[in-house]
Image 1 (cartoon, helix red, strand yellow):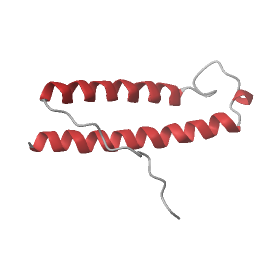
Image 2 (cartoon, one colour):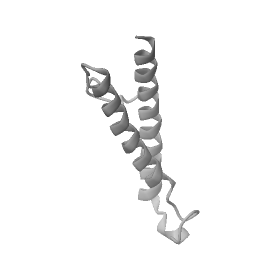
Image 3 (cartoon, helix red, strand yellow):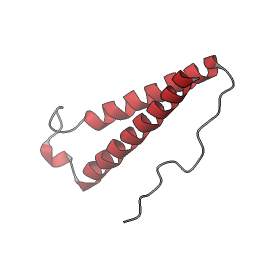
Length: 84
């Protein structure tokens, strides 16, 4: 089974520590948004269980994969910045 690439573009480059910190902050905010969206379901909200259709379950699966990919990339970047 061939793995689908999550990111088609190269990560953005930064020229200073301030730019790197701003980029990391932006990515963390996006990650929080995705995690919040991912965590909303019939199990933890007022939504009825029948409202979680196949489309929503598939969307949650995609979001989980996206969140995992973002976390992996952020860890790579923060480790690389820590080594410099």
